[in-house]
Length: 301
Image 1: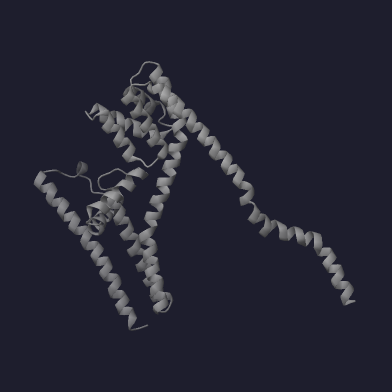
Image 2: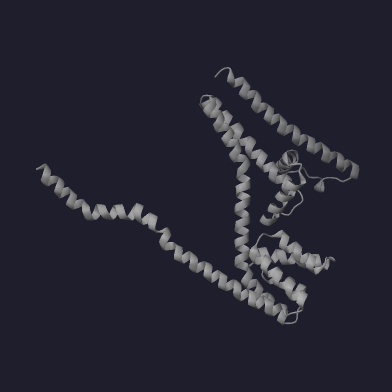
């Protein structure tokens, strides 16, 4: 124990020193850039602790992010599916993963040094803690993507109904999307932001098909992709977009109803295991308990 404590202290101090050096190196680069561009700080105020912590995570992420552009683009696409579209989102993501991994590893080592013994099993537990800290943000990101896709699936039918009403009232497709994004800001926030982004892209000079393709690529929702495909086909063949959207909205409502019926049919199967493990033993004790006690008393007498 006495021989391993200096080694553990050296590891902890080295890790903290690396984090601090990365933070001050990034701070020095930003200060140099600000001096070259003659840009002062925000109203002359010093950054708060949250800003400093965010800069530390960005500095860690810039060092630990993969250099392969294909892997980085895949992470950027997954972050876009979850709603994180900032340019520094991949670096912030890898910074969070690295910080959690190092923090859990350091806490595990310190707890073992002061409250337990250092052996191979405990060191494996430290490695396991570091792995949990590294892969936990990835699990959270996957869950956020699924939750966002569920929100889009719930918001689509009502959004399509309002879009049909706007197009039938005489608005163009882009203006109808912009009106829907304004009206459904509180009811359907995810689709409201996506449609507003599409409207600004088309107003900025992006072609309609390219803006629709960007809308499809920004999200991982099968329902939204099918809606975009319906719109593209209607515009390509010159059919009525409002009628196509109305038919597709009815199909999506039917799909939602079928999914609800499927979940309702699965309830009986899912309740079988709790009934067998929890309800049935208690029921047997209540019914057969007195008879068993009488039989035991009879044979013992």
